[in-house]
Amino acid sequence: MATADSRRFVGKVAVVTGGSRGIGAAVATRLAAEGAAVVIGYRDNQRAADELVSAVVADGGRALALRADVADPDQTGALIDRAVSEFGQLDVLASCAGVEHFDALENIAPADFDRVFTVNTRGQLFAVQHAAAHMRAGSRIVLTSSVSASRAVFHHTLYAASKAAVESMVLNLSAELGRRGITINAIAPGGTATDMAAEHGARYQHPQLRGTMPMEQWLSVHGALGRLARPEEVAAGYAFLASDDAAYMTGRTLPVDGGFF
Image 1 (cartoon, rainbow, N blue to C red):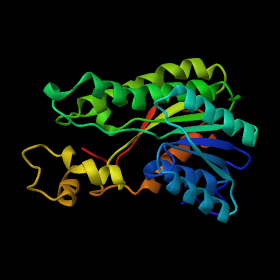
Image 2 (image 1 turned 45 degrees about the horizontal axis):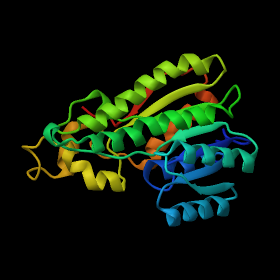
Image 3 (image 1 turned 60 degrees about the vertical axis):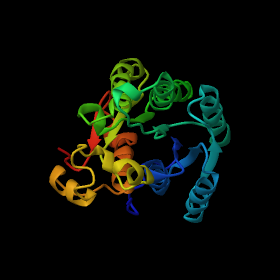
Image 4 (image 1 turned 120 degrees about the horizontal axis):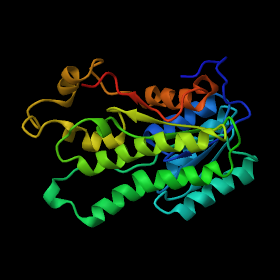
């Protein structure tokens, strides 16, 4: 958690896509705790987004919840335009919206490809495009990859490829945005205690182990820290990359995975 003297984002405005739940909600909470005005983008869960806004405001912060499906670049653009209209500027984009996918090669349909890449890859690209149009030197962009981008998991090809594309996008956009004094990086979370992990976490195990080893035991032998991350622990990585502490870091993907191996 941010401490009382950790106020790196006072006077800053941040947009957090996928901000109503999981890692995104933790990121919005962390940035707000450090002084940022936060715009929380959500697709479906308006109640959770409104509750998060209420919590931020109750703590003396500024926040606004706006609906936008990142699969539609026009909605993303409208979200960012509204954020600038409400708060006068944009200093941080934390792109946290994403969808999971597991299936065998023979079952992957073109519609699956379109859904996963539309949200996880295209959605992040156009969020960057819209955000960068409003940003000045010193602004920060933090996208979301996954440890899956750099390791083999059964039936996870489509999701992993969509996240690997994000890492390449970050690397290449760093040269372009760097000329404007804007940094762009990504976080690659490992297993994190969210509703997505509760639904899909067991599928990261080898198929021959599923049902034979409790998830907690599997984590104890496949991670240096032996447990899932708490969302706020992952959010600390986003806050670092969004801050001036990471002013000379760009084009990189930072794993926050508890030493997963």
